[in-house]
Length: 277
Image (tube, rainbow, N blue to C red; front, top):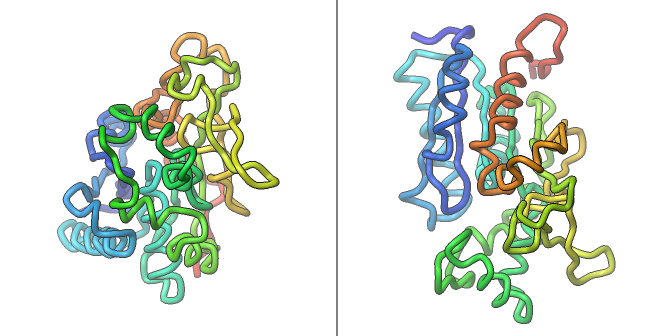
């Protein structure tokens, strides 16, 4: 039986990813006294956001029953996994609030919709973006038109509109951890010369160093959420710039330490915790 002292942490991987991305974070959390529940949605990644969110809900309920745990849980997500969790908590469970969640930590999340998903579908820009990312972030021969999740994460889609309408929950603390190319190092993410595509204010596209190569900071921000931009010491980019790009963030030692400290320190006296509804 689990107790609040062994509070579970649900780990949710991202788009076209797998639970193996947590092979650095999970041991660190377990060493800190937290119990990890790894949600695997690789087998249903083509089913769409709502189906995966419902599967996440079923997974949490099943693990609660198996462990006889009825207290609050934390959720840590990478990339699109953050929006899967948010869809469950804010859209599906937004009114009932039956899911007792203390912290939602998102690593490189496209909270406002994905500029990259939109770029994939751009008739002029898309083919070049896909060519650069083939074998790195998308498979060779990738067709975004056949990818339901990518279509659902385009800004203004049914899913992103539902999240925007629902808004965040005041009984959950949101914290997002973002990578940034503070030193403008090309090897940070070579596919785009160390930069990240984002929407330009007047329309069209531009590139920025305020992103992780895949998700610009402008995609991640949500009102009221706490945000950590890493590295804290830009010298880390000189040593290992690639560790701060989107793909590597979940295994980045500084990210691992930040997540661990966030989830453990937040239970200490005097540290802000979400209000009870």
